[in-house]
Amino acid sequence: QVQLEEAGGGLVQAGGSLRISCAASGRTFDTYAMGWFRQAPGKERDFVATINWSGSSTYYADSVKGRFTISRDNAKNTVYLQMNSLKPEDTAVYYCAAAAGRYSKAIMIPRYDYWGQGTQVTVSS
Figure 1 (cartoon, rainbow, N blue to C red):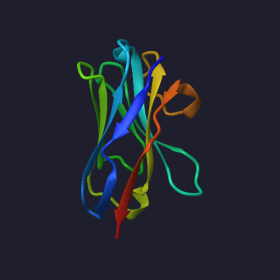
Figure 2: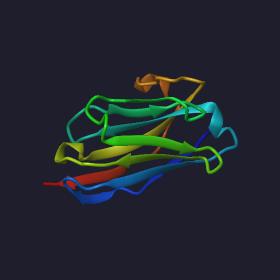
Figure 3: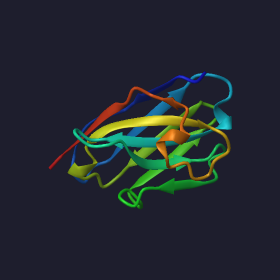
Figure 4: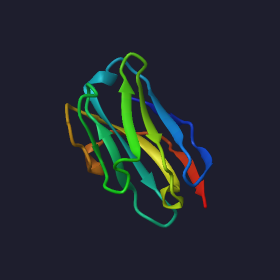
């Protein structure tokens, strides 16, 4: 069982930056691929970024490529999402998720076994 807790969301102006984090419980964090997803009001939950168990491989949605960076610190059981050049369309609840296995490109929701409660990110224009 893995419990995930996001932190760091908030309100930021367009063009600004924000870093959100996700702390995981348990001793097996480094056996999970981690991902970030987001869900805007009235829309489906969409893939944002994923990182493999070691941090050596990352993959991004086209909409955030070049602006967002996913990283992880296995010693701290934490995954991060650095968001730069934020746009109003990035406004959403951001969820972190854990997928058991050494996936390098886990982009599908059913692949993930555990989810956090989400953190709100609002980008004002």
